[in-house]
Length: 611
Image (cartoon, rainbow, N blue to C red; front, side, top):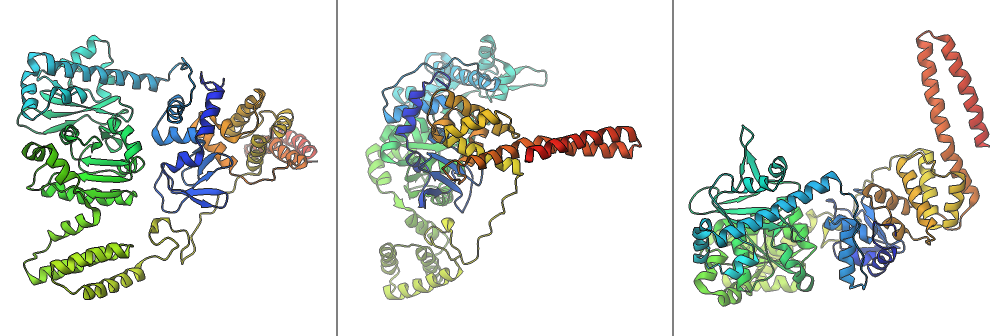
């Protein structure tokens, strides 16, 4: 065993059943480029693909941000898993018949603090839920929820609770259980006065726990009971909670998404909960109506179709339009559920019932383009001829970007019929707009997805790689050959050992020697599983992308070893020369002469090494 208490055979089984192309392909659109697969990196924003997957080595590498590793490493980075968590999830997905005991390794200070905060949030969620259901404090809140149509089943499923109006209910309970008060403030549960006393952030509010993707409570959303501002109050951001990366109820819908790939986006917690009760079991909400790119990416990697179901008022339509464009940019297919009479989903369900909500709102969600046309109408007075003409002209600009002739024809017919226009005239106008757009558009090999063009009229400016010292390149070449050939590794170990000049290279060599000492065969992906260090994985993935002759030439290997060995002497000679010059400038001729003798001795040794 080499990875805590996870047996090597478990790791090997995971890597065998989770091909790197299949694993990455669930999150990144990959296209073949020779023996590699390429795509846009999911770890940073880019327009030209620099993310490379190498199927024969079972690794990935991004030349833009430096990320790299095997399929386990990819899952760790994309989902934020620890190594054991990633392995366990991948074992469950592949339904492998393996089990192991978790390692009892000493957690870091950061890990301990994170666990304490998770324990505190879990305790707070249970306390608020208990106060709502079992105390006098919670009766008014419970009456309010019942009046809004919340059943006991809903309240229990979503762990809804109540924070009483007293200033320090939670603070006293946390202090009684010896939680660190400064940490509780840092984690967003408490506030403090100038005199150092701590008090609750949430008071007299209905409490909605917010979970992370694994179902751990990491924050709260609190709705005020009665009138007041703010109506909703979220926990402040902390080491656990990042608003831009969090989707309410995501942990409940995630298993369903693997089958349906369809997500419904609501504005708030209550809409998610009431829609869930109506039969929409794939609903989530962002922390506020403005989505972030991280939210959009999180949704895209878990779903292909996103249905936006926001309030029917102007603010809801505006937010839907804005977020729809962000989701489309992320690569999602988007539909919009239109709620009439300026209602929100909860109000519509209460007024018209669950069945009608599903049939007339959710099932009748319109495609993104249809919603854009509806949204566009608000800016024009259609009872006036001038307004109608301007609307048609802007609508044609929207239709002009559609690549499907059939889809363009469909919307053109609708425009022609509604505004009593000649279909041929509209087609002619549309063709003129498309011609103008094509003149202005950058030329490339991928017109449907211009962000993914690699062949442009103008030559792509590639940043020249920074030149590395000879010893640095020699160490990388040696490690590349060693990872692919145990005989080379043994040869280098006997002659060089761990005397690599770059610290990361020395660490990679040490891991590799230990890997082969266990009798393992050369396998880049399995070797990388022994590293479990982000920086080392990045270094190793870059080294593994080097091209070299697979048949070892030991003369070349000897030359690399000499290049590595002579650098410390070169560095020592340079340091001594600088020291000698300082002595000369200081007038210390004797010291300068002594240093000069040392330099001559080292230079002779250096020449001997070069022969």
